[in-house]
Image 1 (cartoon, rainbow, N blue to C red):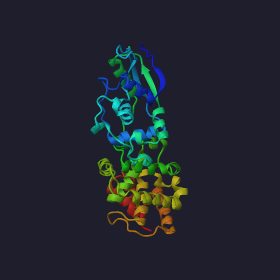
Image 2: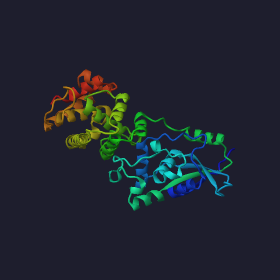
Image 3: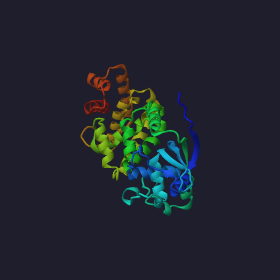
Image 4: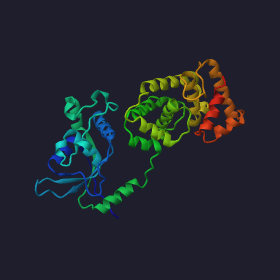
Length: 351
C-alpha cells in the first residue's frame, strides 16, 4: 500500500516572496495550468488577503537544493495562480516573466472601496503588513513524489467532488459590480432565507440564494422571464464592469423583502410560498405593485392589508388544491417557465 509523507505547515506571503526572489520557488511546473486569471479575480484575491479570510490549501513539492544559490527549492504543485497574483501585486520585479499587460492590476472598488485603484506601494502600512504576514495553509510533498503520482493524488482528491452548478460557475468567472451586489444582497437576507425555509443550508452552501437574487435583478430589467441560465449569464456579462441600476435595485430589493416580511414573515415558513419557485412569483407581485417592471402583468398600486388577507387565502387554495386548475398545474410544473410564472402571478394579483 502506497503511503504519503506529507508535511502540513503554514507559510506567510513574505516566505513565498523571499523564495521567489532567491530563485528557490518554481511557480510553473510542466503539469500546472498557465496563469489565466482575469483582473477581477486577482483584485478579489488581494482583498481576501487584506481581510484575513481563509483560502484553499497550497501544495508544494520539495526539490533538490540548488547548487547555484545553495537554497532548498520548492515547486508549486497547486496554487500557482494565487501565488503569482500576490507576487505580481507586491513585488512584480521578482517575476522574470512579468508582463504589465496581463500581470499588472490594482484593487477594484467593488471589492474594497477604501483601497480602490491602489497598488501595493499606495496602501497604508497596516494593510501592506497584513498582506505580507498573511498565512497560507501548505501541504508539502516529498521530493521523491514524481509527476505521475502528483496527478494521481489530485485525481483522488477530486474523485468525490461535486460538479459546479451554474451559479458557482458564474461565481468563478465574474468579479464585477453586479456579482458583488448579488452576493451582498443575498447575504443580508440570510436569516430570512433560513426562517422562511426557502433554502436549506445545503442550498445556501451551493449559492442558490444568490441565483434567486440574480433572477430578481433580471426581473427588474426584463420583466418576467424563465429561469434560463443563458439569460443569467448574459446579465452577469452585461453588467460585470458597471451596473448602472445598482442603487435603484438594491433599494427596491430591500424594500420588497421588508414588505414581504412585514405582511407574511411570521407565517412564511408554513405557507406554500416558501417553495422557491412560488417565492419568485410572490416577490414579483410585491415588486410590480411597488415599482412596476417591464410588461403589463402587474400594475403599480398599494400593497394593503387586503392584499395580505388574499395572499393567505391563496396559500390555502394552493395547499388544499382548490385553486383554479391552471394555477395548480403551473405550481406543480417546473414553474421556472415564463408562462407558469405568469399564471401564478396573475392568480396572486387578484386583491
